[in-house]
Structures are given as structure tokens and as C-alpha cells.
Length: 352
Ligand SMILES: Nc1nc2c(ncn2[C@@H]2O[C@H](COP(=O)(O)OP(=O)(O)OP(=O)(O)O)[C@@H](O)[C@H]2O)c(=O)[nH]1
Ligand SMILES: [Mg+2]
Figure (cartoon, rainbow, N blue to C red):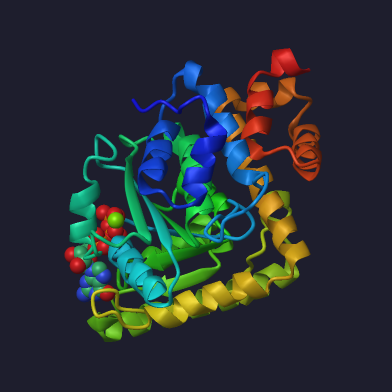
């Protein structure tokens, strides 16, 4: 296990200067679940999100709000990793640095497959502006969700764009998307996924819908049409019956804003326009809205992580869902970082 050095401020500066070894070390340390590491992890995350003391070098960045985090999700095998690689190449061509966390549900251990992944994804192993790390979940994404949160913060401090790939469309994958400024849902033509997403209410989640493997021809065109139709129907229903779920209604995305793209990741077709549209949308969002949106997503993420740890009993102990949500919101508003807040909440008996 990699430990964080006691001088977290120095490590934070190295990360902000994109020192690869520092980034790799901090990323590995975020996976360390030992209590003894907790304080150092929190100190580092704080240091990464506070303005540096003086004389900021040109390369130095803050973890927020400069950088952009994009979530890529979708069922197994739809081409997410191929898509992420094409996206990374596009961003690098445009001069943006890129950090990638690929959450892998099948791999039994993390990190080791790093170089293999890079080669498999056809990414330049010597490119200093690109960093990639695979994270194994051993099938339990819930168990590592908070580590991924930390990793994203580290990468945000070092790179212009951070991409998080998660496989699946279950509750936890959706939760991970709360880390992101935008979430892209990738689906496979002809798989029947469309129907599944509508039934599962997943349509609320993504900011962009992508039918990949457009090189498959008619079946891809059909899948895109099905999705557009489904969105139209959902939109109509939404007008008649507004969502009563508060966490959904405040989600920035809604079906009327969604656009269905078709791409081919292997043929590098159609990816650039999606990526450019995403960057444009995030960049042109007024600062106040962006802050509000990020805070809302953080609040949902904190609530979900808290529930995962303490269950409904924990929520009741904190005075019920709405009291707890209100507290989370006001703490975030006051500038408490999500991980500090989570730590406070994780010890409800001490902090009440
Ligand atoms: N025809 C076609 N095949 C593609 C396309 N994109 C990806 N593939 C293929 O689909 C397979 C799965 O691709 P990955 O990128 O590993 O898919 P993934 O969604 O990351 O898979 P998991 O991480 O295992 O869930 C590979 O054989 C790719 O070559 C595409 O646009 N067209
Ligand atoms: Mg993949």
C-alpha cells in the first residue's frame, strides 16, 4: 500500500505541477482504506482544492473549478474504453492534458494493468500530458466509490480533463456520475438496451446519449431513432407528470436537452463533435450555475456514500433524509469539502 507523506502541501504542489510520480503515488494512496491514512488523505484533498499560498507557477492548477470531469458509462462491451481512448487522443490533439480513471468491475486488482491498458487503448506510453489508471472493484463498485472520488480530485488538480469510465447502468455506476460535470451514456445498437434504460429511469442521468458502433449500419440508425422516440415520449410524460423525486428534479440534465449522437469509436468517427460539444456546454455554463450544479451533485454523492456506510438507520439517526440533505447542502455552501463532510457524518455519534 502506498502511504501519503506527512508533507501533504508539498505533494499537492507536485501534483498541481503534473509530476507523474506524485500523481501516481497519490492515486494509489487513495485506495488505502487504513484508518491511519485517513487524515493524510483528507489533508491532501484539502490542499489540492485550496489556492496555493504564493507564487503560483503557470502549470499549477486547482482541482476545482478549472478542470472538467466527464463520466463515461454504459453496459459491458459497448466500446467505452475504445471511446475514451479516441476522446483522449482528440483532447491531446487540441492541447488539453487528460487524466483517466477506468473502473473495472472484473479485474481482481488495481494498477498493475496500467501499461497494458495504455497499449490496448492505443495511447502513447510516453505522453506526459496523459495519465491513466485502472481501478479494480472486485465486483463491488460501492466499496471503492469514495476512493474514486479522491482519485478524481487528484487528477483534477493535475489535468485539464478527467475522464471516469464505469461499466454498467446500475445504481452505483449512476452514483459515480455525480463526480462528473457531464455524463455520457454509451449504448450498443440492437441490444435492447434502449428499452431497459427507459424502464430503469436511467434516461434522467446522462447529459449525452451515444449510440456507438455506427459502422454496424442500419441497426445503429434504428437504435438512435428508438432512443429519440423514447426521449420524446418521456418528455411528453414529464410535462404531464413532473418528477416527485427531488434528487432527480434538480439534476441538470433532462430529456429535452438530451441529444442522441451516433459514433464509431474504432473508426474514430463522430467522437470529436461530441467531445467539443461537451466542453463547450461545460465552459459556457454560467459560473453560478456550474457551482450550483456541482454542489448539487456533490450533495447527492455525499448522501449516497453516507447511506452506503450507515444505511437507512444512519439516515434516521441524523434526523431523516431531508434534515440530513439540508445539513449536507449548508455545509457544502459554507465551503466544507465533500470528503471532510463525509468524515464528519461518518461518525454521527461524535458529531451530533
Ligand atoms: N464495430 C465496432 N466495434 C467497436 C467499436 N467500439 C468498440 N468496439 C469493439 O467492441 C469491443 C469492446 O470494446 P471496449 O472498448 O473494450 O468496450 P467497453 O465498453 O470498454 O467494455 P468493458 O469495459 O468491458 O465494459 C472491442 O472488441 C472493440 O474493438 C465501434 O465503434 N465499432
Ligand atoms: Mg472498458
